[in-house]
Length: 100
Image 1 (cartoon, rainbow, N blue to C red):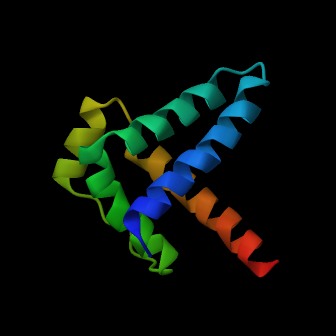
Image 2: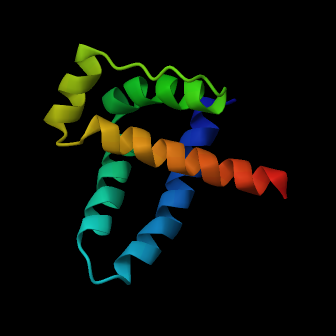
C-alpha cells in the first residue's frame, strides 16, 4: 500500500463525507470531519496515524498509540480514538467496495 495514495484517497472520501455532514443540522459531524482533515493535513499527526492505518488495512488487531502521538493529537485538539474510529469506518467502507 502506498502511503501518499492512501492519504489522497482519504482526503477525497473526506470531501464526500463533508458534503453529507454539511446538510445535517447537527454540528458534531462537521467537527468530526474537520478533525479528520486536520489529522490528514498535519504531517506530524499523519506520521503517527499512518502506521495505525497500515495495521488496519493489513487486518492487524493491534492498534498502537505512543506518547508522542498523543501529545501531537492533543496539540492539534484531536481525539486519537476518534481518528482511529474514522479510519476503521473508512476501512469497512473500502472492504465493501472491494467486494463489489
